[in-house]
Length: 116
Length: 114
Image 1 (cartoon, each protein chain N blue to C red):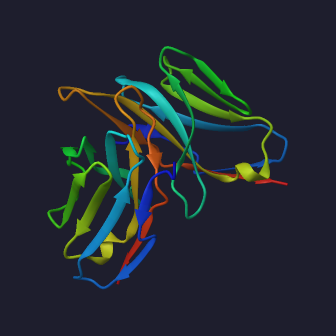
Image 2: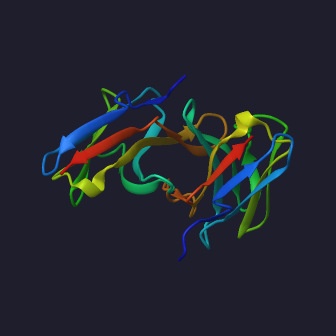
């Protein structure tokens, strides 16, 4: 059962335009969400996060929006740059019931290609 | 800080051989995680440690897989015997403490079992 889903395996946008990457989750226990960026032959790099008590978090060109009622979050990159071309992973964290533990659950990733 | 360090970066071995992957977490981080990434299953958590103690190993696929953390600055993931289906990229990540959910990943080890 995929608890975190990124339904678009790839996305292509023009340089300077907005990139919107989407993520859906099913587990209502998730209360913290993160986006990671991954270049080939490198490990995922933390990009931005948002707590479930917020609906928006902004960091420079990157903004994450959270819609809790829809169990949906999105990452906006404005303006997009060729260096943003990478695979983006959505991750969710929450308390695992009966264990007191917290762990990250990752989506399958979306490959973003920004065309010059 | 140098970040999370993994070695080797690439490993090619033959079926049946023992493979040992190594990880040095960020200094001061209390949590260490081992992940495996494959095309079929994406990024999946294998095991994680808190203060050198294994907390959850439910993601370890089989008894052929084992992980240890003898001290706060070193962990190993061992596969014995290795099989072709173990071919994947293995990532190590660390997290500072319970005050954050952010994990920092190493560059990964690409394992190929022939």
